[in-house]
Amino acid sequence: MKNIFITREIPECGIKMLKDKGYNVTISKHKTPPTQKEIIKQIENKNYDAIVPLLTDKIDDKIFDASPNTKLFAKKATI
Image 1: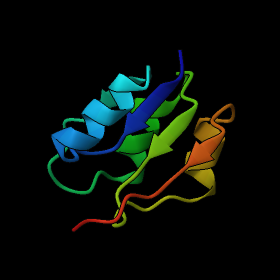
Image 2: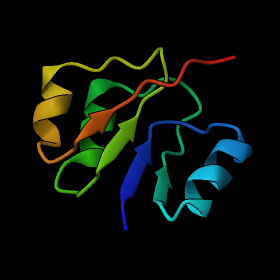
Image 3: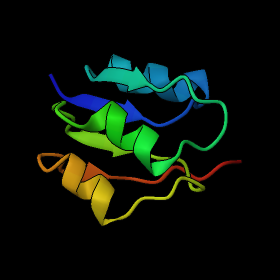
C-alpha cells in the first residue's frame, strides 16, 4: 500500500478519493502553515511515497533530505 502525507487538512472528497484508490493517508493536524521543523518532525524516519504540502508550505532541500525515499512532492493549491 502506498503512503501519503498531507501537511494540512484538504477537502474530504480528496481524502476519500485517495483512500478509495487504496492509499494510506496521514493528515497533519495543523490549521496554519507548519514550520519547516514541524514538517520535518512529521516526515523524518517515515516511509511516505508522496507528500502533499499546501501551496503556502515552504518546501526546500531540508524537507527533501528528511524524507529521502519519498518519490513525489505535489503541492496542492488552495481554492
